[in-house]
Length: 137
Image 1: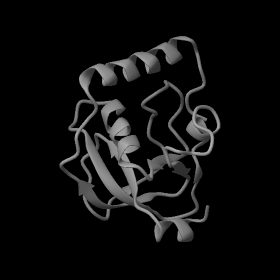
Image 2: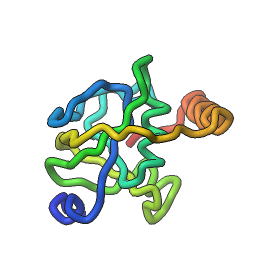
Image 3: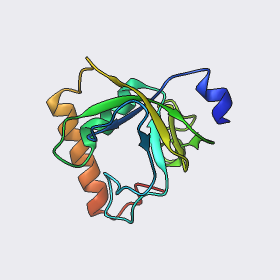
Image 4: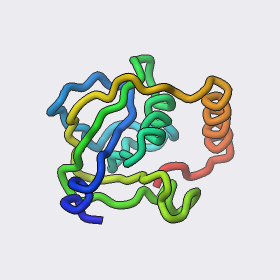
């Protein structure tokens, strides 16, 4: 999917704990929320608010969970961590890019997942880590 086609056809979201402002750039080089691996060479984002909520809820750190509407500044591709391994066909509308994402606005008023569902997801991530699964490609 080319960035030019996707930018004009849908909204994109990024969940995090970083405090950003409109115009800020989300860039590669930050640690993963899911592994102890080297800093990531991709930035990840989604075309669904629900997937971005998971990103915010699972993000490392103690800051406030935040979701931003973002726009890619370069080419994007399907996120193979989800689309190839868990959800063929990309129903989560999960993407990645080596180029920065520009923050358009903060999304407010969203509702997180129920505590028991969030704990199930955290337990699953911890289990995958303990088993040495390659969570991030």
